[in-house]
Structure formats: structure tokens, C-alpha cells
Image (cartoon, rainbow, N blue to C red; front, side, top):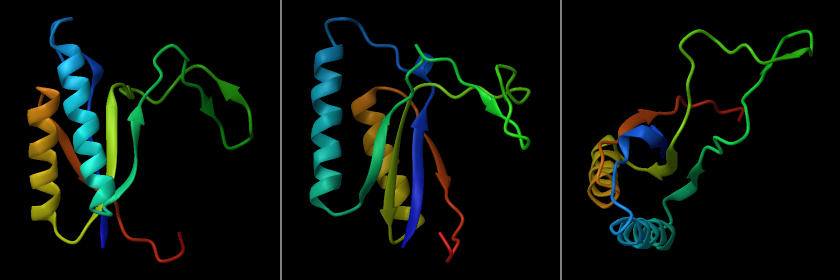
Amino acid sequence: MTKYLISFPSDAMVVSAEEFPIVSAESHALIQEAKDAGVYVFGGGINEQVDAVLVSADGSVGTELYPGSQLTGGFLVLELPTRGDALEWARRIAVVCRCPQELREFGYDPES
């Protein structure tokens, strides 16, 4: 089976304070459904309160990141049999999160 990344940047999710608890409950219910179905691998949100760093090949650590690199928001990794299944999960997540989702496929590496 293939692993898929379903994600959105934090500024894409625009919900009111009143609606946020509903969105949170619905998204957690959908995550539980993925766990129950045995397709959940990992999920979460990027902690934007902690600055990202770049660790260079020589081991040095710096605050300058790759040009254009910006990772924020939430993500979910699912392991699914088909891209069609991944699209369906992404659609369902878009509905409960009230925002579009990006879908990416992880390349298969038999050594990892």
C-alpha cells in the first residue's frame, strides 16, 4: 500500500470562534474513523511557535531555510490501497476542516 500526505497551510483554515469546536470535533471523529479503518499512520499540526532551523551537511544549525520553504498548518499521513481512496479521504478532510487539502504521494523505498 502507498502512503499519502494530506495537508493544508494554517492560513487556509478560516473558521469562526463559534465554529472552531465543531470543526475540531468533526476532524477528530474522522481521524478516529481512519484509525478504526487501519489506514492512519500519523497526523498533527506544525507548532508555529517554535522556529524551524536548517541543519547543514556539516552539522551546523542556522535559521535561514530553503528559499520559498514554508511549512505550516495541519497534515495527515494515511496508508491506502489506491490514489482514488486517497482522494476520497482528502475530500472528506476538506469537508470537515472547511478548507481545501493538498494531496501528495510518498515514493516507495523498500529500505525505509
